[in-house]
Image (cartoon, rainbow, N blue to C red; front, top):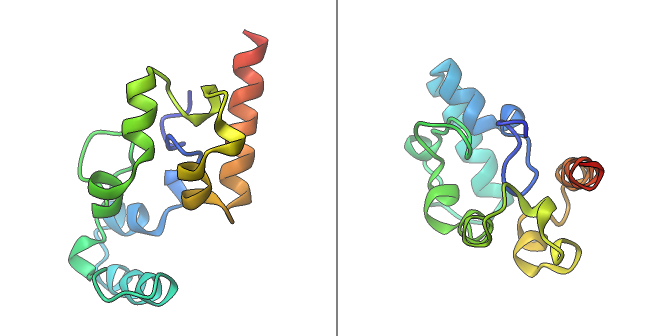
Length: 119
């Protein structure tokens, strides 16, 4: 499985937090912080929290992914590599809350699911 596709199907390589981390770009961290605070209607996403190497890779994780995400613990508990292996994927409230409007993540999970069914 592609190490940069998260447990939920999000492509970590395209994540702005990961990009800012890899580039060590404080200006980008500030921009992402402002953008995400606006999107998520909060003020807790400060630039110092915009650090991540990807949820499946070694290294620092974005605070939401490491402390609040319910998906990784669920996938791990079930012994899966991603939500694509779960029979409840299409009806999962946890997954819908995370990627409900993210068509790319849904497509990634469908692609991974198709690969697992061929094996």
